[in-house]
Structures are given as C-alpha cells and as structure tokens.
Length: 470
Image 1: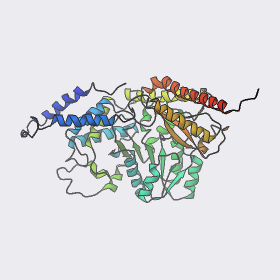
Image 2 (image 1 turned 120 degrees about the horizontal axis):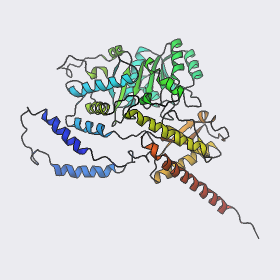
Image 3 (image 1 turned 120 degrees about the vertical axis):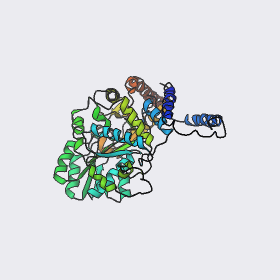
Image 4 (image 1 turned 135 degrees about the horizontal axis):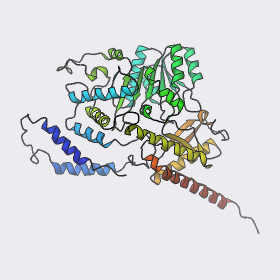
C-alpha cells in the first residue's frame, strides 16, 4: 500500500470547474514571476524540501502501523479539503464561508441522524477535546455540580473540568474497563453530581460504558448525561456488536449531548470533531453580539453556536463530500469497513488467548486489543511489553503500549504476582479495513520477537551459570 497519487488529476479538473464560477470577475494583473504571478520553481524547491522533512514519520497509512488511532483520510476527503483551500472559507460566519457553512449543517445533521436525533444543535470543532469542552461548559451551566467519569475515560475530562473550575471525580472501572455501576451509584447517592460522562469506546481498550444502567440511574438522580463517543461513535453502524454493546448504542438518543470525531473513524483529515446537543435550546447559552463580524445575513451563523471563532470551512467540505460518496448507513460500504476492523481485533485477541506465551486482556468490544507477553510478575510483564514494543518498531511494525490499573487486569490474570498497582500492556488499534488481511503477518512478527527474546534470555542465563567441575 502506497500513498495515493492516482486521484491528483481529479483535483485539477475540479479546480477548473470551481474557477469557472468566478468568470465574471475582472482579470488580475500579472505579478512578478511567471504569467500567472506564481514563482513555481521556488514553490517546487520548498515543497520538495517539505516532502523530505515529512519522511521522518511513522507510516500511518500502512497496516503495519497498528498502534494509535491514526487512520488515513479517504481520497475524496483529501481532495475536497484541498479544493476548498483554494477559497479558504471560514465557517465562523456566513460572510466567510457561505457554501461551506451550508455543507457543515448538512453533514452535522447526518451525524445526528446516526443517533436518532432529528432535532439537534451542533457543529464541527477542531477535535474531540474542544467538542467535549463545549459539552462540559454547557453542562456545568445547565446542571451545576461535580463532573464524574470513569477512571478509563479520556484524561481530557479531568483537564477540562479544571479549566472550567468544576470539581471532577473519577469513578472506578470494572474488570471490563467499563464504569463500575455500584461505584457510580455511591457517588450519586453522596450528592453534588451535576454531570455524568459516559464513554462509548474508551481510548484505552475500546470499552463501552453500560448506558442502559446509567440511564436508569439518571431517572433516579436527575443528572445531565454527556456521551464521549469521540472514538467509538461510528460503531453504531457496526453489524456485529456484542449484545451488551449494542444495547448501549441503541440508547444513545436518550443522552443530553454527545461528541464524535470524524477524524478518527470518519475518514477525515485532522482536525475534525463534532459536538451535538439533543435540545436546540442549548443555543441560548452561546448568545453574543459581534456587529463587526455578522453584517450580510440575518440567518443563524455557526459562530453563534460555537465557542470557537474562526474554523476551517475545508473540514466541513471534506466531511460533506465523504458522506456523499460513502453515506454513513447500516450495511453500506463505510459500515463494512468498521466491521472489518472489529474482526481483525477479535482475530488478534483470539491468537493471544490461544498462545501460552501471552496474556490476553478482555475480549475487544470494538477494534482495540490489549494483551501482553507472559511473565511472572506485573513489573516483568511491563518490561516485556516495552521490549516487544521497541523491537517491533525497529522492524517497522508499530504497536502502542497502555498502562492499565491492576484492579482491571487482576481478575483476568489471577496467577500473576501483582507487585505493582498497574501494568504496561501492548495495545493495538486495528482501525484500517486492511488490518483484517494483515493480522497473520502482524501476529507472526510479534511472536517471532517474543520467541527470540525467550531464546536470548535462556542462552544468557546458561552462559552465566557456573561450569561443573570434572
């Protein structure tokens, strides 16, 4: 798999069509340089130098990159984003991005439809952090009190609560990496909780908090419920979720707000997040006056329902174009790609379960696998995981590591000597559809590293043993 260059001629064709939309404008005078005012040779030199610098990167586009949540944008998203950059629209106000603002509203409405919301309020953001910030900002004003989330939730919730000046409480997770319901109920009974953040797809392990049980507690305690689905949102389209996981996704519409990141599974360039509110009345919180920005339209500007001001219209154009080519619908081509990633994760997990050289974590709910080389103690497992991680990288297989609380893993690995309150594991996000075809090769590389490590350790141990006298 190589970088896509075959679609580049399509960009020139689209640019020529775009340019014809401005044929009624007077011609610009020639500027220094060539006939159209551009010093192409100077640009060429800088671009080639830029390409050389960019080669110092991991191969995020390749299936052997199976570490963090990095998925290449779809060609249509790259091309649509680039096409929009010739105009460089700003979706803060209709004056700066008339067409791209309309495209954003359409694309965001399509995302809301995924979760059963016909009426909604929402917009794109620079990523999940900003989207979650807006959700917690609104929640803290509508439902004052502490913000609580699972200890396996993204660290951004702790940080954002500090920025907002709101108390944050971490709720312990169970042995599946999900928020522990008994611990949550105890926190609610103690009082002072305003907002519960449920995570549908933790970035640690892909675990999905038990939303039906959380909604039952919501009926009793009346907190505001925000869903962090930045990573896991699109899996509502998956065809083979476990029953408990499907039950959670089927109740998403009952939450007050949610976040989804199209730049993760949505095939978009960075950064593209999205905040959605079930009740459009939340827009009243954003109300402000900016007479020097809004002056040619009486319509609602996206900047009037966003904490961010300038935002790239190109992100909206890219997402809109991707939805046109690959509608996010159950049973479609886009959904099939999610299913392939899930099958890849289950395959890799099954291999770890069947191989006594490894310790397997809990069964993957989405497309993240947590496992580790077998060793006698938690500290030894951590050291072995890091050795495999580093050696795999030298062989161009890029995994990730995750530090997991002992309380989560102890039930899965009861025979381990728990000499530490946490353990470092290998973690792999198999989010590219191509990963399904590469699991065998990835696993063979991992097992080869472990076998060589065991052999080296054994030889080293023997060489250090004293020789018996004759």
